[in-house]
Length: 246
Image (tube, rainbow, N blue to C red; front, side):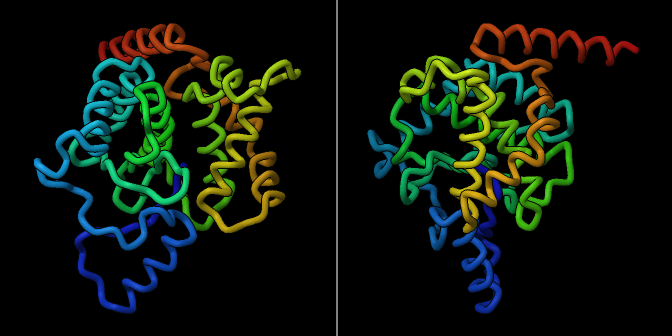
């Protein structure tokens, strides 16, 4: 999920603060009016915050999707720092995470991420938004087509529509099922951050689907599982070495 707008620690004037909160209610309601998300050592010990931090660390160090995206971000001039660019927070509703474009920060909903596999998918999904934010001039807040494109790419490339995940959702056996899943997941993600009708969200997805579904950067292919992601990472590293030697 992308398109959050939230300012932390800047001390805006009262009118500006109210305006920011109003916008946040529309695009990232689960992060409104939260103060500093950092917790002290004793308060976080054996809590959801510590579990979130440990799962995040494992994801960053071992997940092939994430390792490729981190390399691609660095190659594009947007190196990712764990402490600066990730925040484990409690969120309202069933949201698992989001990309806060105003601070270039990924929010991980520690109260809604309950296992390592879920953490892997959420971090991958949000890093794809971060990669899009790095490489393109994405207008997250006023251009619904930009948001739809990034949501299509995130659903397509994060593994969220893998056969295993779809079987767990009891969704399988349909023709062109992967494409159908990507459309549905992208639409749901838009609805989670925009106060619009389902019809408007679906129309935005349909308008950008062909070009954005076929944009596989930085993977170069649709990584249907971790094996595909490892091959994609190897190919990216080889491509990077090739261009650095030209």
